[in-house]
Length: 106
Image 1 (tube, rainbow, N blue to C red):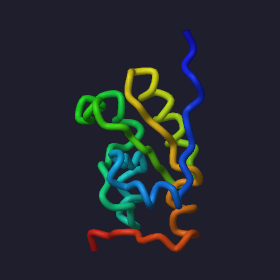
Image 2 (spheres, rainbow, N blue to C red):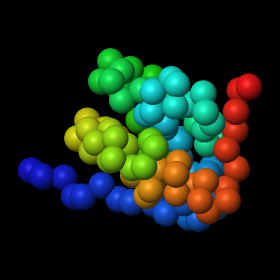
Image 3 (tube, rainbow, N blue to C red):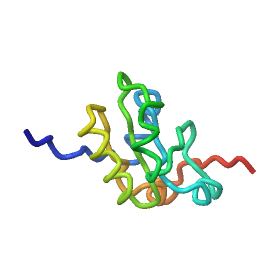
Image 4 (cartoon, rainbow, N blue to C red):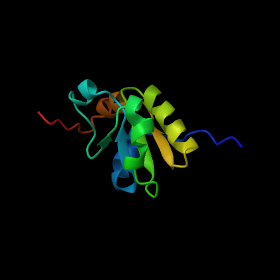
C-alpha cells in the first residue's frame, strides 16, 4: 500500500503553527551552526534511521533542511515508518527570505 504524498507546509503557515508540531532540522552540524529555526530538534539526515526513536510518534513532525530536498527524503522515510510528517517548503532559505527569525547558539 503506497502512502500519500508528503504534505508541504509553507513558511508563513509554519510560523503561525509552531506549537502544533515538533520541528526537525535534518541538516549537518556545520549548517545548524549558521542558524536554525527555534525551537527545533536536530538530527542530521544521515543519523535519522538510528535516532528516529528519539522522536515522539504521537506528535506531528515538520521537517526542514537548507532548501527542502533532504527534508523531503526524511519526511518520506518518517511517514513510511508510521510518523505523521510534513516538509517545510523551501527549507530554512525560504524561512529567512520571509524575514522569519533564525536562532543561533553563538
